[in-house]
Image (cartoon, rainbow, N blue to C red; front, side, top):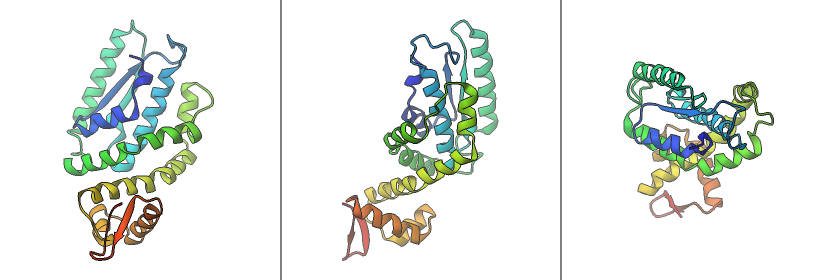
Length: 212
């Protein structure tokens, strides 16, 4: 299977299912057998997913991508063994990050709901014009892209988490803020925006927000 087929959702789902690390192996960059350069898509998805993991509080080093040819069995073994050692040092998912499994699964589920949105963002604002490893590294590791990603992702993730909570039961702004560790004023801002888009409604009898 082409490494370009490894979607963001596949990676996040693996972590959501409790995997401690995810390793992606692709063909050597610039040597695509199908002339689609899917390995560069895999590289972009890896960079994006690392930023998502870091944003929700997980160590981005739990995700790794390496490139090799079909004849490089020795490299595959070397990379796999090295990654396995690294993951063992970090321990089970969430232990070194100080996050319990329930909270991790909740945050990953909220992030997974944003995958279609992130695909569009990648095409429109995070597409690297030059297909080279150095170009991708310079682009995704630049301070400007980090700021842009935070601006793009932070509010969307907060809203996604709020909608997941409201899917369980109606909640007040204060309860939402407490459960998610957000500022009540930010929650109120998100609720106003979500109400305008028809995603939530305010119940005056219970003084709570609910899914529309």
